[in-house]
Image: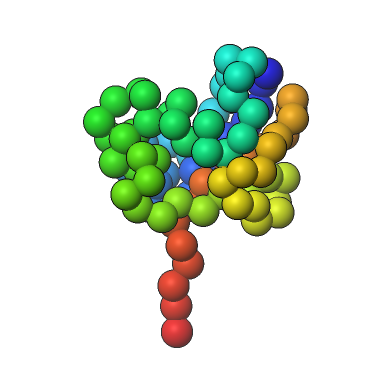
Amino acid sequence: MKITILYFARIKEVVNYSSEDVELPDEIETIVALKSWLSGRGETWQKLFNGSGVVRAAINHELVDDMATFDEGDEVAFFPPVTGG
């Protein structure tokens, strides 16, 4: 399955790019599985996606939880929690 992943804010700064098109293994169907797959890329990725920090996700511009599923061609965005005042 091919999807587009977008990275925002601190995540974008850490990975040094804002988007990528990826071909996923068939078993990667949920946000939590995608985070786990991304964390397998190395130490930097583990720090971002292994669950110790909060990383929010959106599918096609709609906020979702980690159990949300996505489909071929979807756009998945990752970003840290938004704070402000």
